[in-house]
Length: 256
Ligand SMILES: NC(=O)c1ccc[n+]([C@@H]2O[C@H](COP(=O)([O-])OP(=O)(O)OC[C@H]3O[C@@H](n4cnc5c(N)ncnc54)[C@H](OP(=O)(O)O)[C@@H]3O)[C@@H](O)[C@H]2O)c1
Image 1 (cartoon, protein in one colour):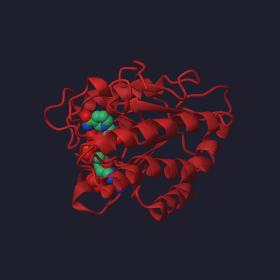
Image 2 (tube, rainbow, N blue to C red; image 1 turned 180 degrees about the horizontal axis):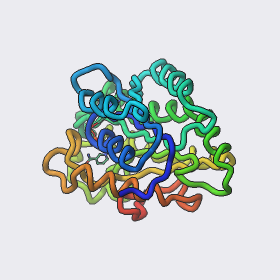
Image 3 (tube, protein in one colour; image 1 turned 45 degrees about the vertical axis):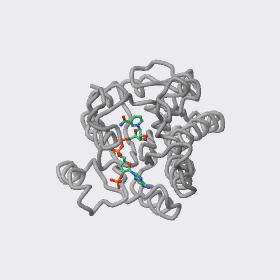
Image 4 (cartoon, helix red, strand yellow; image 1 turned 90 degrees about the vertical axis):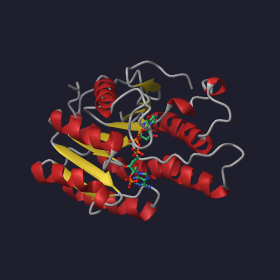
C-alpha cells in the first residue's frame, strides 16, 4: 500500500496501462478527489475507467484531456478548477506518452513532432494550466517544506531518456524520437523544480521500470501493480531534497 496522503490527484493518460493502475491505487490510498484524464472518456478504451467512476462517484471524475492539444488542456483545467475547492490540487501526474518505434535513420519529421508534442510540450502546458491549483494546494497546506501531500508534479520518464545509459542500449536503438523527447521532459522537470521552488511545489522525473503494458509489451519484467506500488511509495516519501531529481520506481537515483 502506498505511503501517499494526497487528497486530490490528476493523472493524464489514465484509461489504460500505468495510468489506469495509478487511478486504482490512488483509490486504495483513499485519495478523496481523483481526476482520471484521458483523451476519449466515452470511447471503448475507457470502459474500465467509466466503471471505476460509476463505483466511486464521489471520488473519481473522468476528464477529457488530449495532451497534444493546448485547447483541450485549457478546457480540462477549467473543468477541474470548477470542481476543486480551496484546497487545490496536490498531485499532478504527467503520465500520457507515445513511443514511435523509429531509429535515427527512420524517424520522420512527423514522428519527431508527434513525440515532442505529446511527451514534452503537452506536459509543459499541463503544468502551466494546472499551476493555479497546485499553488492553491501548497498555500492551503501551510506546513513548511515540500511533499506530495502538499503539491507535486510527477513526470513519468524512462531509463531510455538517460544520456549516460544510451551507449549500453541496443544498436540501432528503436526509440529515437521517444528517448530524445523524454530527455526533454527531464529538462522540463529540472526547470519546473527550479521555477516552482518558491511556491514549495516539488517536481521529479520517475522511471517506472520495464512494465507489461501496450507500450512495455508482454516481454517486460514488471506488472503494473508492482510498478505503481513502487512509484506511489516513492512519491509519498518525497521532500524538497529530491525535487528536480530523476528516480526509479524503487527510489534509486537514475543517471541523467
Ligand atoms: N511500460 C513501460 O515499460 C514503460 C517504461 C518506461 C516509461 N514508461 C512511461 O510510462 C508512462 C505510461 O506508459 P504505459 O506503459 O502505461 O503506456 P501505454 O500502455 O501505451 O499507455 C499510454 C497512455 O497514454 C495515453 N496517451 C497517448 N497520447 C495521448 C494524448 N495525446 N493525450 C492523452 N493521452 C494520451 C494513451 O491514451 P489512448 O488510449 O487514448 O491512446 C494511454 O492511456 C509513459 O509516460 C511511458 O513513457 C513506460
